[in-house]
Every structure is written in structure tokens, then in C-alpha cells.
Length: 277
Image (tube, rainbow, N blue to C red):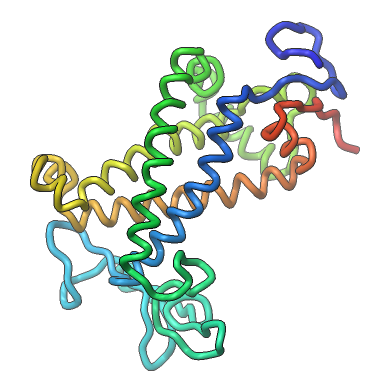
């Protein structure tokens, strides 16, 4: 098995080391942690399925986002734009067939039954599995050069023409072959950078801002985001962005060849792809 940093003549069909073990461990730990936190977070959201900007927010205040139900059925309302969602969001049937009018259905939440206290315990317990390994991965990425070598976009890659070409290649399912498949393209770099260094830190920061204990100890932290409700909104938007990233990530794995892609993130072994017929 060749190593991509020592063999200058990598060719399609060769098996190489793609992901080092810290990356693989962090990937799967993150996969478990993020799914639990997203699902427990949706149950927490069910307690008050409205989002506001500023310091205050209650039922009679203006909400920029609301997921609910009325006589016409379930809906999502974003700044006055109402989208019917009966059967999926706002109004749905539980496992016994009974109609429920909470924002997110039972299959998308932890716990699957309404339990605000339980969902908070799940959320906070797994938050440590997100923060501590995440900080260690950050340190490892900078110390071993992984960030600068693999994730930091080069100036040439940020040219609009280069980004647009990458968008077109993805839309046409033109995946890189040979040694080029080992390098992150600009869309991957931007998305990974956005998740690891923007969305995840903002999730942690805004989560801390919603803690009464942290508010008392560091009141300036809440003012930084414009108030508790703004922090809650940013927390939700970042969570949705990460969920969208996961969906696209899974889709790309399936389209690029799931067996080879999964093997690389489980064992580190990756067969360099050739051109598709």
C-alpha cells in the first residue's frame, strides 16, 4: 500500500493511505455526536417552535420563523411566507396513528416522545463529545500541518472561474481521478472550513450563551450576539447548515462510490479511481 506523501507516481487503481487515524476516529465520533445533538435539539425546539431576533421572544412577539399547526394543517412560516407541511412538520401522526401538533415528528427527535428535560440531558451530555475531541482535532490539525496542507484554500483556487468550474464538474458528476482524488477541491475546502471553523464554534458559543449560568458569569458574551433570542436563532441556523452539509456529504459519497469512500474513512485504505466509462 503506497503512501500519498512518498510516492510521486500515483496512478488509478493503486491503493493508498487517504485518512490518518485521528481523522477517522474524529469523523465517526462526530457522526454519532452530531446526530444525537441534532435530534435532541429538535426535541428542545419543540418546546417553543418559534425563533426571534433580539433579547426577548414570546408567543405574541414577532417570530421570523415558526413551525406549527392551525385549522388548515401544519406549516412553516418564514418572515410571513407560509409553506404547508402537514404530515411532516407541525402536524403529523405518531406511531399509534394519533394526530400530533408539535413542530418535529417523533422519528426525528431524541427522545421520540415529548420530554424536554430528557432531551436537554442528551444534548448537554453529548456536547462534551463534540467540544473536547473537536479541540483536540484542531490542535492536531495545526500541529501536523493538516489544516494548511489539506484544508486551507489557495489564492488560485478562490478565483471565481476556478470555483465555477468546480461547481460545473460537481453538477455533471465529473469526479477527479488518480492522485487528484486525494486532494480536496475548492468546494470541499470551503464547506469543511465553514463547518469546522465557523458553524461548529458558533454552535458551541451560542449554546453557552443560552445557559443562565454563563449569562451570569459572562454577560458580555450574550451582548456579543445581540441577546438570548438572537443566540438561539444563530444556534438553529448553524444546526440546519450542518444538517444540510451532512445530507450533501452522504449524497457525494454515494455518487463517488460508497464502497471505496467508506473503506477510506474506516481503514484509511483508498483505491485511486480511474475515469468512468
